[in-house]
Length: 510
Image 1 (cartoon, helix red, strand yellow):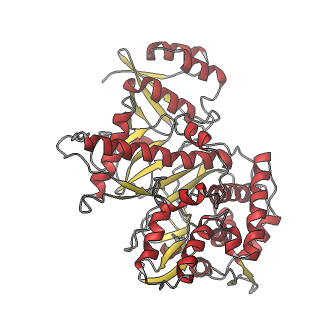
Image 2 (image 1 turned 90 degrees about the vertical axis):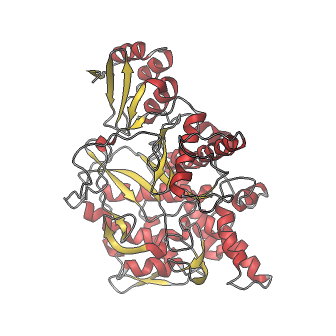
């Protein structure tokens, strides 16, 4: 049993991107336009990303397949690597030919759900600015023509064989045996699809099969445990890149990008509670599966929820029954946790009746209701209009999105208000280091030389002032917040922060 740790978590969303006016335009170029256009709209948010703490190929199992020996210095507007720190403390950047939103560090599942939804607002601002610049015949990228209007999709597959990620991140104690944590989470991740899947029209990685399944990521999971995120993907990802001192960061890649608030809340909240339970010594070893990788796909294709997974001890349970076993072992630490468990109980009870009874709560059920309505009207499963439904649901534009249409009609429940989400798009959480990163970037952006999850570097007269934020609760003291709000210049900021107990490392300009 490890000591309990504070709850910190967040999400990463790679958006699907298209350019209807010019489908041949490289997604690397269009993604760069989307990121740099946001930077142009918020002109103070153009600091470079500090890669010194980036170790994406360091493995929990003790090795590091590092890509470089020295830390790269990258132009924040460069094609394919454009990067912006947003006012809410998030990162908006280009990753593998997708614009990606990495949310600020949050302190509970509800807050993380709101900031995940806020990413859609930031993405919408970016593509609106791209369209405005195109109308003015202006390009934000030197040497490139203006970019035609873009569309972004919060999904995970292109229907042609590629999958892109919607990752989750959870703080956990280094005292915890990673193998114990992994084995407890594997059956949970297999089963949680029925609560957290986004739904997918199409079967097989390349979309060659016709039909509907629960999860977008299921056909792309090939191993139980793996370091990879773009091939040979595992149920458990072993990346050991904590972005924090003394703690681990569980990097979860098996989840779908979700739009329904309940799906997102359950994805983040239940996973946090399982990690807490393992930390507290709760034993889940009796739930190990005989063939977890095969069961990921089997559960995803079981829209009737009748498939039974085989456990290592030869018992057979449905996904709902397996989730019930987890649910009985989870204990809330806060009122917010109690709300998560209430939402879980409601969703499980609805699913026990049928997926359609949960269509007002969960993404895959809402999408399945639309899909089934088409079939009931006589459409063939091979009809391309069904594939279009899949994309239209995930469009983040409220005027085109089927998800947003269902919300407007009162057919899909929301939890956070539009005002709360809009606020989160421009204000960072106050309970994590994201507040420092976001507010300093917004207020003093022209003097922010570099930023990362763990540091912010300011230009201060003839010197650089480097603030190291190695703990997720760094710089959360009210006196630090007051210093940021009071200061008018970086010189004044450094002085006030020093008085507030937050000292910088000062270096002379090179």
